[in-house]
Structures are given as C-alpha cells and as structure tokens.
Image (cartoon, rainbow, N blue to C red):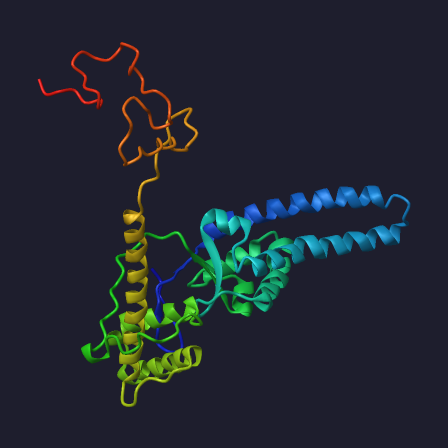
Length: 314
C-alpha cells in the first residue's frame, strides 16, 4: 500500500488506483457517455430538420461540450468523485490530502480529459499513469487529485487511547451535535497515531484540532488541560453516549410486553360480565328479577332441597 503523507505529517492509508482498474472505469464511463450522446444527437437531429447547416453545426458542438465534457464534470461533482465506472470498479477521486473533490477539481479533470483521453484516444493518459508513481494522469496532476481504491481488505482498527482518569465525565454536558463526522475522523486518526509523530508536529496538530472542536462546541477546555488529553476526553464522552444509546434501545426492545394474540374470528372485545347478585336476603321462591326461582314451587325441586334453596349436608 502506498501511504500518503500530508503537510502536517499525518499518514493516510490510501491505495492509489493503477492503470488497469482506471482504464476499465474510464471505458465504462465513455460507453455510457457516448450512448447518451448518440441518443441526444438523434433527438436533436430530428428536431432540427428545418435548420440550416450553420445552426446544426453549432448545436453539434454544444452537444459535444455539454454531454461529453460537461456530463462527466457534473457527475463527479455531484457524486464527490464516484462516476458510474469508478463505482463499478470500486474507485473514487479525492484530493491529494484525502478530502472530497469540489467543482473546480472536476472542472480541471474534465477539461484535461478532453485532451488526453478523447482527442488522443487515451494514449497520453495511459503514458502519464504508467510514469506516475501513484498512477495519476495529467488531469490529476493539474487538479491536485488522486484516484484511490475504496474496496480494500479491512484491517483491525486501532483503539483510541483512553483519556486521563481525572478527565472522565468532565464533558458530560457538552453539546456535540454540531461536530461533523470529518472532524471526528481526523481526531480519531490523530489519537491513534500521535505516538508516531514528532512531538512538535503532533502538538501543533492537536492544538489545531482542539481549536476547531472548541469552535464547534462553544466551550473551551479547562485551564491547563493538554490538547491531546482534551481530544481524548471528548472522544471518550462521545463513545460513552453512543454506548448508552445502543444499550437503552436494546433494553427497551427486550422489556416491551408481547402483543396480545387474537384468535381467528374473534372481535377483540371481552364478553360483558354477568350482573352482580344482590347481597340482601332473597325471598323464598323469588329470583333476583322478581320472578319465581327456577324449579321452585313447581314440584321440580331436587330431593332434599330446603326452602332456602340450600341442600342439607349429606
């Protein structure tokens, strides 16, 4: 793996793409672009039958610039360096420092690509990529970009060193919602590699990251706390919050009561309870509703039944 080193002596573990994978991605992109160009040309040719030759020539040049050059520029800008061919081959265009590209990078790459890929059938781009140590063509050199491989074998992640014990829990009230993921990634990379850096360079990087973190959170670290310890404590607080959130969600899911099952054909309503029996004495032979008690006075009493309606003990 060819590691990239930024101006702050931070090593980025990126894998530059070589000529075979880049050529395959470029072939896919060119095939898609030419198909779109042919379809648009047919539609425009049908719509411009009544125009003169000068107008048709102007439309053709405009289509060439918009589709074959402007199309790839727009796709790389909107997808942050992932065109259809690069996405299929697991590649991506990034800046020299590993950050995502912007419109100006895509514009320079597209303008140079029209010369070294379209007009020379890729010969200049292939030679430049073979000569370059990181496989860059001329458009990458002028734009300050690099094509890297995103699909690489995963390595075991290095744990972030813990903060000093006296700083644990000091930032429990800190608002971390405004801190972007890019800053968290930069802080994590620094903390996992700070022992590999020169002390002076590492201190300057830690100070810059701490200042940016203070700008995002609005709260300065306590007086006398080193920048590296402050960064480690804030990262530890974020990890603790994420762990509590995950455990709370799992606990709520496990403690939720099961949903009552309803038999097929049931309406889901409980049957009404029978009316309560009056607690007072009931007249002999009179039911709760004032009518004769069933079986009383009709000669249908059970053998040995008393007048009170109770069977004598046998």
